[in-house]
Amino acid sequence: MASLKAGLTCRDLDGELVVLDAATGYIHQMNPTGAVIWKLLDGGTSIESIETRLSDEFDLDAEEARRDVLGFVEQLRHAGLLEPTA
Image 1 (tube, rainbow, N blue to C red):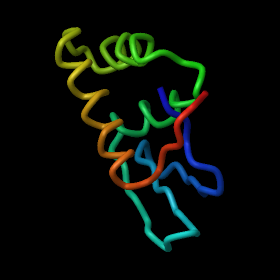
Image 2 (cartoon, one colour):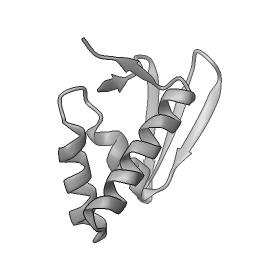
Image 3 (cartoon, helix red, strand yellow):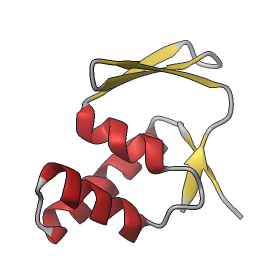
Image 4 (cartoon, rainbow, N blue to C red):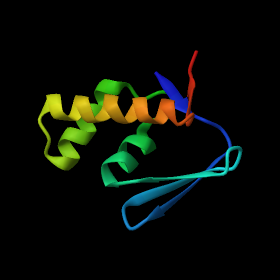
């Protein structure tokens, strides 16, 4: 699993999340689904727990929730917003 990169500034705007990476100057906007996943990426919450929460909150089946979580985490890695955990 990974945890969120240090030095990011986050703002919740009507269920969506805006994240500023001051190191790169990039602003990332996340929809409500992404915002839930983001908030649970604390380095201690398992992918399975995040999938369950997403499934419950957005009434998704387990496979759809898993696909959404893994896809979003991969997007965050590609954007450089995650750091590996030990």
